[in-house]
Image 1 (cartoon, rainbow over the protein chains, first blue to last red):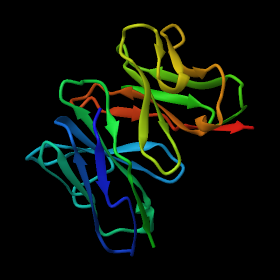
Image 2: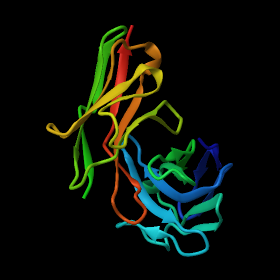
Image 3: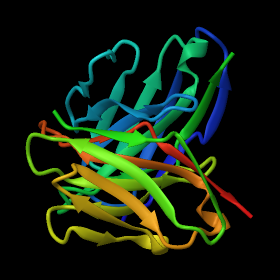
Length: 115
Length: 114
């Protein structure tokens, strides 16, 4: 398995501001993903974080709103830009370990509230 | 495209009773299927996974699931519910795109009644 940490664990932000969420993994990973879980709903994939190149975004998500970086194999950031109350969600980092093609591990999530 | 459907957004059982959480999948190829649990204010934890080996899969905390191709189902069961089982449960299927990421069902909230 892997130990995945996310910072911050939670935050309350004002409309129009931006928040950067960090994801750090203690193992070598091949894939890193960012998911959103809106209140009372399931998980939706935002993007796949690619090392050293632009992230691959799912339909409905754009780089200007959710810029993602992945400078190395074990670290990634997701920024939620120009926030509105509709962005209030839990944001989860997920990884697939080297040598494991099927299983995904999840971080504890970042609980974001936008006022 | 791969997808999963979870029947029942809320399930309530008495402590000691059978737990049955339903998941049906849609896939054009043999699927890889997963059950995750999310306790309040926590991330997701893998309960078990099916990756085309044995059709009856045993997971953690006494849970198991059976892959039934004829029914396109992967229901999660536990013979005797415990209070600590109260949580949100998600069924997921691995996608077949480049990243092979997971696609999740809408979740089932399990309540265990003392």
